[in-house]
Length: 323
Image (cartoon, rainbow, N blue to C red; front, side, top):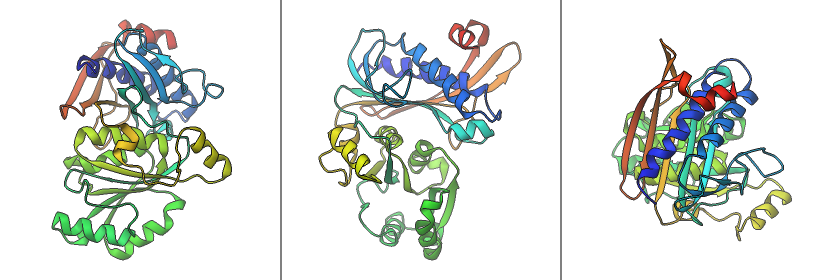
């Protein structure tokens, strides 16, 4: 993939973030998500790729745009798989809470896992623990091994997990072992990325979240030198059959980074909508301007760019058309 694509796709996440941010705290996650999706789809027309959405807003009959299988881009440039989450953390925006993002990952065609819309058990770590832990081990074993590798007592280990009833057992184990816990209300991609960002203070991310978000996080972690292991959690026969139909011969296998994002190059971009662990949210300035803060990364070079942009809103025709 051409390196110029990194800057092209961050323009797409910026516009989605600007569009969604206008709904912050207004209690309407549907409108916020729709605004982000419409802006992202429209901005994709300017990107020089022949893209196919493999992770998006749903199947064709469920989503009016950015649906799985939709062709995006201007029809020029490389053929790529596209994974999007125009608003990762709809509840976060609706309630004015932290860590909402607009997210995109692209890879050469055929590399991104067509992850079904179901839960995935996840274990995400930074570079120091990459390749040294196993999702199949008991959580107690994993925590002790991580503490040993990082050369710190268990009481100084900080684990991030979504605050959900389904995680009751894991949370009980974390408390019994004596590690520090940082709860996340929403924002599965940001949570899984956190262990690979030293400023976050997070050593490991555990628990279950969306499978599509797992692939997006794996793309980010590949660029950051971290690792995500996943295991799909089909809850019934219909979900199991859907895994088979999407090409997953064994829905219960442990998914590696290679399974989720392939071996080739990956580009990941995210723009903060609300303030978060590593990105600032959209900030409105005087004179019809707004500030965005984004990260864009490429796995091939391991280059990480933080981009702070000032936008003159009257010139954002797509935003004005959305209203």
